[in-house]
Image 1 (tube, rainbow, N blue to C red):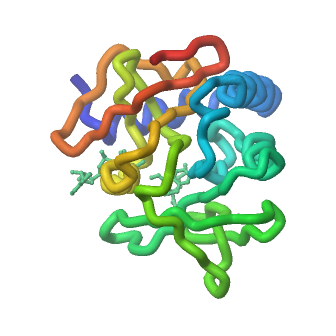
Image 2 (image 1 turned 135 degrees about the vertical axis):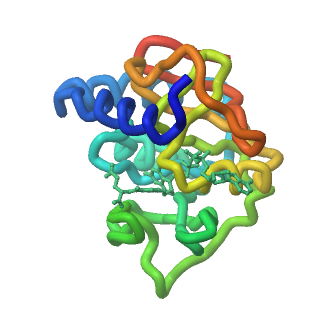
Length: 188
Ligand SMILES: Nc1nc2c(c(=O)[nH]1)N(C=O)[C@@H](CNc1ccc(C(=O)N[C@@H](CCC(=O)O)C(=O)O)cc1)CN2
Ligand SMILES: Nc1ncnc2c1ncn2[C@@H]1O[C@H](COP(=O)(O)OP(=O)(O)OP(=O)(O)O)[C@@H](O)[C@H]1O
């Protein structure tokens, strides 16, 4: 089996092969599948993410979470070297600023963290996934360290179908997801 680094490079290039049109259409379907689910409807405190250009796009999702009156958090990297992040509350998408690794996040001077155990639902990005709901991420170990602290939350991955692989090289610290949404299937 390939190692994580090699597989990550391959799967990132496959994700990049989507046209922006495909990416937008698939992102809309994934968002629709998620917001129609009971886990979304039942969640009051949600952590999502601000997407990088190749990822499942989340603008519509972030707007919907706020419009539904739910608490919305996104990752704020507190220690890049140690792979640590917190759930920072956001009230308005327009307040986001460019942060670590060029990803939009909350501005430094007005941060409020939600305690991880308060989260009901975490929407997790990734580079590849398996049908048994393991994920390969960007390689920082951020989610593997964060998810166990959010022990009351449902962990929901959102991926494009072309990110599916049969198996992944797993480490003891890899945390499986509870449910995965793609544009044409839901694994639960
Ligand atoms: N949207 C989003 N936010 C997230 C994550 C993520 O995967 N997606 N993370 C999940 O862990 C954390 C950030 N982790 C990251 C780890 C490495 C790189 C990275 O290597 N960036 C390259 C550019 C890669 C690219 O553009 O494809 C770089 O900065 O040079 C980026 C984010 C927290 N926030
Ligand atoms: N809970 C943990 N405690 C200590 N080290 C960890 C933990 N989780 C992951 N790591 C380490 O972090 C490094 C990156 O892990 P991995 O390649 O699984 O990240 P990833 O899931 O792809 O990244 P991300 O979650 O940031 O998207 C590995 O060296 C891994 O052993």
